[in-house]
Length: 361
Image 1 (cartoon, rainbow, N blue to C red):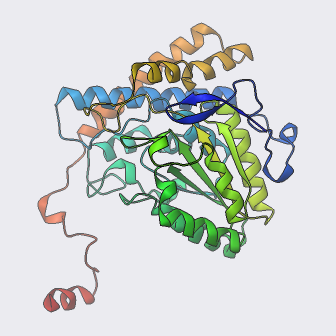
Image 2 (image 1 turned 120 degrees about the vertical axis):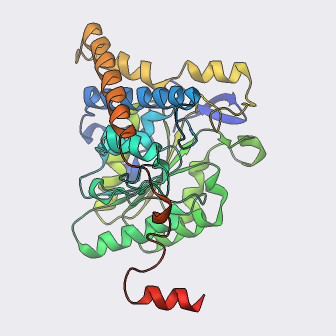
């Protein structure tokens, strides 16, 4: 079992030399897991990072109104690793900082920018931002602004998928702050009772908006709660993209075999404030420690060590992705905005009941 080595921000950390998959899901063998597609995952990881940096720059430029930026820089490996582990028919229920998973599921840059800018042609139709994206063609069910509300919904989605009999699973992302809500306990308990094919993934960044871990968690390891629900719980290094992929592969395989849900707690840290532009209470020492665990250079080093690309190729990749991001932004800015008369769209049923509802108000 991976043992914590020291306290950082009130949360015990995994040792760097421990095997993050050693607490194998239901006794699974990590050696039997498919090899992670490192180069492809690195490209998506880099794309997610560059996109976030681009939206921060655009936000600060003040050129146009857009959604507030809840940066995910520093925790991208979780969404990317999870997204690549999922099968085509699996369904994702995202959280606040899930854009890396959107990229891994194949959501195009133009669609992402359209959501950020609130365009009428975006998945949210201009009525909501990209963070709450529901794009069923990419296997993204969507979420809401209610913290943790997607957790019991994920259980319901998993039960519906099981009823269809195609072997598909639901994957639910949430933060450690949401883990203390009643929605979390109810959703996980029900999933365990019905052996629903769902994987719960806690992006454990050690802070709930501006609260430090120790102020809202009496335990060091959130994965131990899984035992009370009657499901396996594993804790991994969320900044190791290969570890995330392998853990997700095992948990999804278990779910497809009818063995029920798994809780994965992925330790990570967002390297920006809760919302871009707000102060960050965390200490410089804390941030320096986690900056040294940044998943992007770690993934790059893994790609180079495996001989999957050269330094020059990875540098050229960065330049080409930056260009793609800027071109997609320019195209998104040309898309139509939502007009005032469209604000009531999707509020009332567009059939005979519309008139009745309005007359009854």
